[in-house]
Image (cartoon, rainbow, N blue to C red; front, side):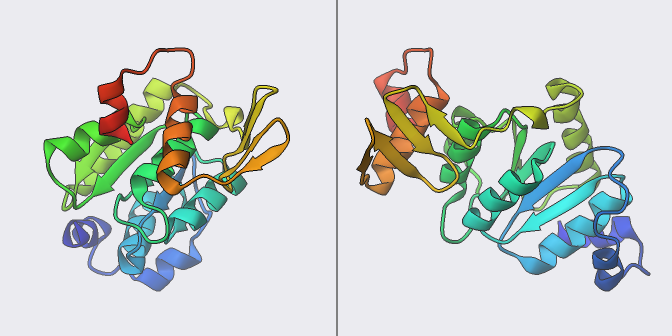
Length: 209
């Protein structure tokens, strides 16, 4: 995909030029990219800015969640293989925070990875390497499905009067008492919250969490 992007951007494009243009444009919406490869991030940022998007980049799960909360993007491009928090957990956090479209862009192949990502709330799934024009088309498609403005519904916490979850930091309290959950317990709770209002089958929990 790196080569596809370079070809699409033109042989004279430079990464430094792309970084200087950060925040320019954005008439097509704001895109948050979460990936652990800085070169890939830089090139993809240049390409998407030239396609008319404003771009925010993050190199890890925690940084991605923080940047999402700060910038409230219109669409999120998420790699599954990222440091500190895996992409599936990040996807769950986002689904508890917002309805913003998520496109998984990863080197992980296999139907089980696709199904797990979609069951956790991802809207689309692409494997690396992929064609840059196809990625842009899919971004525009999920934005059309989401409607005009999707970033107004961001939530930083879940609170039903009994259970409180700070989605951004993963802090959980019940009746004012802090609960110390194992990572898989937190993933399970976040998934149940993201699916609130419906009965979640046992098999779906096993597959998703």
